[in-house]
Image (cartoon, rainbow, N blue to C red; front, side, top):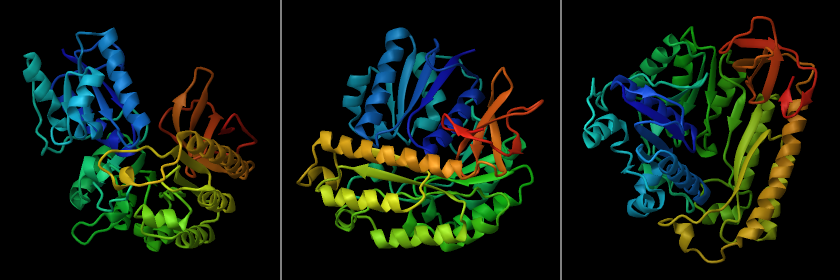
Length: 416
């Protein structure tokens, strides 16, 4: 039996797609082994949203080739859509596989290595994704048509397009039948979902009717696509987790305009206030890019103050990274990396304080987690529906259980 390993870098959508690629390899007769182990093939599902992400993908590929020279290394996904020759040279990978061929890798690798194949699924077959995690990611949409000045995603994934509603629900039912109790809805720009007069709220409502599914979570969603009906539905839903990740990127109006974002800082504030009023105990996440072209001290202060004013519980902050073939790459007044890094660190410190304050507000209150890892001492870890890390000790506890408990403290980054 041939062996294959996987490593996913980047977003939740990448994780959902890796699970589909993994399923195709298993159907083709491969055994999945741990990444970095000796294997016939090793698939690195890449990310190129930042320079750091791409460098990590390259480092991993070089590491595999150094430790296991005979392993057939594949760099697949987003990074493979940009400067393929450079990527191949720097990584030492045997194959650079773009979006259009990554689901056909079992056949491609089999042909290149002259391996016997048991079965080769084609990309149109409804293969149920195979996850190596407790929760499952459900892809509903791909691509983005917004064309923000700093973002390379439209180049690596194309225009926004939605998967068929019936196909999405069928996959969710299959995942539920396989034992997954939590489903995370994902895509590049999921709020843009449109298919057969259905929107994302219709997907959520349909998922609620699947008995085996106990929790539904929404991944990152743009505020210009966030219908208030989703927020209002979340307030009364028994399964939809009280957590929203709403990318801000910058709290400065001039930068929002120059970067091609379709909202103002005031509009962002207005939506956050509506969310908090509708769901007082909601977990709130956001993305911030520091050092965007022309970001001066006042622009950064505008961002910092906006974050400071609201109870964000999860900040994803990173410095701007120049990506070729984006409008921002050709703009003037690029911020020195040192300054962008300092601003990143300042926001991260603020985020840690806010995360702790939010988590501590749940001490003494009943919370629910999906158990994911069970240590030998019987301590189970997981996440609350507000996306707070937690750990619990209960008799006979097992992975993939939705359990409730009342935390007595918050320490080392977890409710316990």
